[in-house]
Amino acid sequence: KVSHAMVSRQLFLACAFLTLNIVLLDLAAWALAWARCSHSMASSGKRVVFIADPQLTDRTSYESLPSGPLLAIVRWICDAYLARADVMVRFLSPDAGVILGDLMDGGLRFPTQEFEAELARFRRVFSFLRGTPT
Image 1: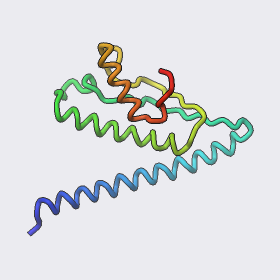
Image 2: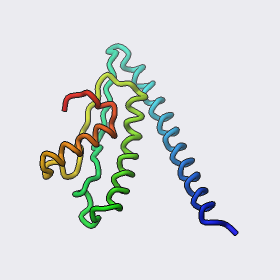
Image 3: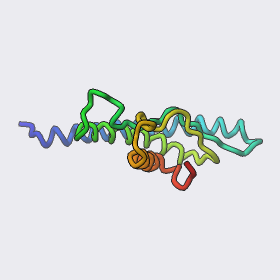
Image 4: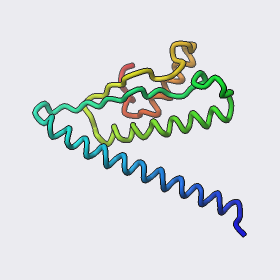
């Protein structure tokens, strides 16, 4: 008889294995692309990374999703997915980074305190931005 704990553990290990493989494949693809890009830009010696539309999921993202545990799970998944881009950026060590698009869905509608909290969350996800002006 298979126990619930054993099935849960196997499911967790399968998800962890798949996630690790995706990250490693992403790293390999980015490294190859960066090497080609770096080689072709050797004369300027500057590297710039562009991140397109890295918006955070917040309370305004999905009208049908109530605040609470489910929203917290969705936010955590979104942050983990975006953190993969941060890993790539730190791996590539660019001289500059440009963020294209909005940082969060409800940014313009948030009161100042909530906006500041979401901006701090954005900087936690994208650690390469720490210490840079807003």
